[in-house]
Image 1 (cartoon, rainbow, N blue to C red):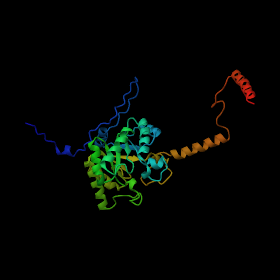
Image 2 (cartoon, one colour):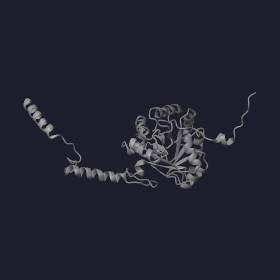
Image 3 (cartoon, rainbow, N blue to C red):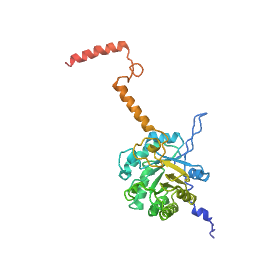
Image 4 (cartoon, rainbow, N blue to C red):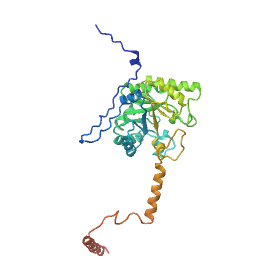
Length: 325
């Protein structure tokens, strides 16, 4: 006879990907007496942080240098955000970003970020036509781009797509609240969930996406009491951006947090450094030094040549010139 195994209801409700490990092995140092190497972040470790109420850190990265900063300074999740369309490629909207461009930047980030968990935004249009197309495009981001998971913007309408992805082993992070890819239909980047009905719809969307297998959910630009309530009523981590301190973790765009972006600054942005102004000062100093000929200095920033070799060169140069007169 077959044995009947009773599974506790709490386990049935647990997201399917809660136990997934990262596809990358942990980094191990083989150098004697070297400092310990940070353990590779995985979905399981992210869940552990949530369980211990340790805030999860997430920062966008778009290239090797920003990825290295995330690597060296203990960021938990690197998000290759579609904001690269504006801050890196100069587009006026994230909707113009292509899948090939995203894959290109993912490759650069995954070369630099070895211990953070790397998530890639799926560009606008790459997951909307059908679940089959969405799976195919997500596979490209993972196989060609090196991403470990993907992020999708949307509510209950994308739950079937999320389910299709997670059922074949693609880790999915959902994104509800303000959806930047839909800013045109939303008439701009407006705060969401300020009235009772729209707040309830955001909660319902988050629960539907969790049920479809999303391992985490970004909450963007919603009232902080709502974000805290949603976080308390989910079993997966929430990552807030403009959603207050009650989320499981926080994410910011690199260029906003580091003071590189000079465009509109949202209320929820805090600048932790002013790299943009420092870079501007550096460029101006460089231009001034070149024009006044103080850079480069021949002795300290140049290379010498033996006097005998220089004299020999002058003789050869003179002969060469006479032959070509």
